[in-house]
Image 1 (cartoon, rainbow, N blue to C red):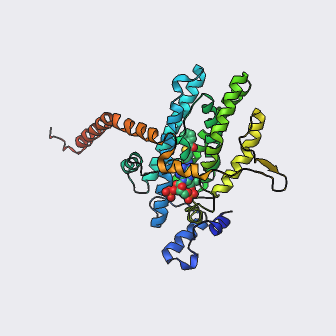
Image 2: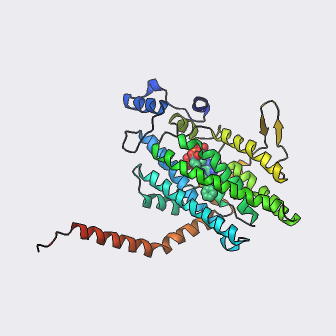
Image 3: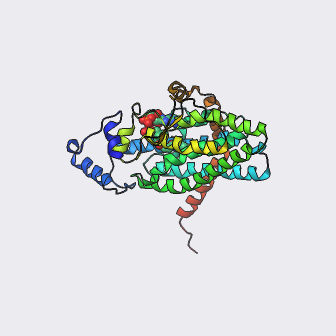
Amino acid sequence: MYAQLVDTGAQRVRALQDMSPEERAFQEKIDAGVKIEPKDWMLEGYRKTLIRQISQHAHSEIVGQLPEGNWVTRAPTLKRKSILLAKIQDEAGHGLYLYSAAETLGVSRDQLLADLHSGKAKYSSIFNYPTLSWADMGAIGWLVDGSAIINQIPLCRCSYGPYARAMIRVCKEESFHARQGYDIMMALCKGTPEQKQMAQDALNRWWWPSLMMFGPSDAESINSAQSAQWRIKLFSNDELRQKMVDQTVPQAEYLGLTVPDPDLKWNEETGHYEFGEIDWSEFQNVLKGNGPCNRERLRTRVQAWEDGAWFRDGLNAYADKQAARKTQVPQAA
Ligand code: BYC
């Protein structure tokens, strides 16, 4: 799988014989399945790729709290509200593990956040869509967290130790998130015709953006081949997307919902679902900052950062005071 991705990606990678001795030793270590740790020698491109991917991932977790945060005060029951709050809190935790993993590569958290707030850094396209009804909480858990698990399970085996280890707990929590989402969808689908219609409407709006989450097609993916060679990516964007479709269509059938794709059909020979063309112009538009909620999401994050300045100042002042106390020469009795 990995070799195939290296061979067919949109980007060419260097063969072992074209590498410097240091680079070759690094690649052979990765090929042997040995984890790269923060203090090990690493290629500058490897470090940069990881900082890019891990920080985008961290930003996605943090920005990803916002669409769901919109429904905390309007959850239909106390139980649903406490579950939703716990889930959103988990996402904050995921962001923190991931920022910490990125910091082991020599970048500061302040720099990463400055890049997010200036609009320079990317975060997942999916979080630029609005959450219009309670059913969207179900659809996000089922489809978005469901996709996240498919993408992130292989990351538990990626070559960079701190990223792989962070992913283990993240995946366990995502699994709870996906189940809570499906549980909301089941409750709505067993409810009144209006509730079932809400669930269908949420599926209609979240289906295609969820498929886009996996990134551009393999033919268009600029980073895949190199990331596969470095075992940061173990499966291609299209392979993971296909897995999501194969896994999710029977779940939609069980709910009695219709996947909004007239071209969707089961292929007996391949053992996979065939699905319709993704509207990549919509994806590119969201990446350029023109999705339905891009500006609102960024504005909210910047506002939260500014509103928290007094708290960070207080923490820093306390830390400085403690450090000064420790370095004070004890007075002679
Ligand atoms: N959105 O060459 P490609 C969650 C960019 S959080 C935006 O295939 P790569 C959750 C890509 O960055 C889940 N941008 O890139 C949280 C690249 O641009 P740059 C987040 C995208 O890196 C809260 C360009 O397109 N998961 O589950 O090899 C509540 C070309 O793409 C997207 C992760 O971050 C996108 N969807 O592959 C609920 C997982 N797709 O950087 C749930 C870790 C692509 O060259 N990340 N781009 O300027 C990955 O696995 C990979 O980075 C990707 C992209 C598969 C996303």
